Length: 87
Image (cartoon, rainbow, N blue to C red):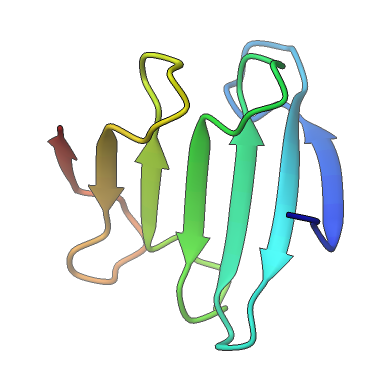
């Protein structure tokens, strides 16, 4: 599960850098795998499905069990995530 790029940046705004692995797929989509708690496992997956630089949906692992349990999506394509569903 290698990444083309790995960055350290403050995603949460708490002043602490998180690890972000970037994967560019053959279909033009871009995935951002974010490790929020520095345990080596992604807690957030942000997807730009058409490679336009705007995130189309985000999957979140809120309880740290390694499984995504919430999805947030941009329903109308305006660049704002506006709907969420939890498992």
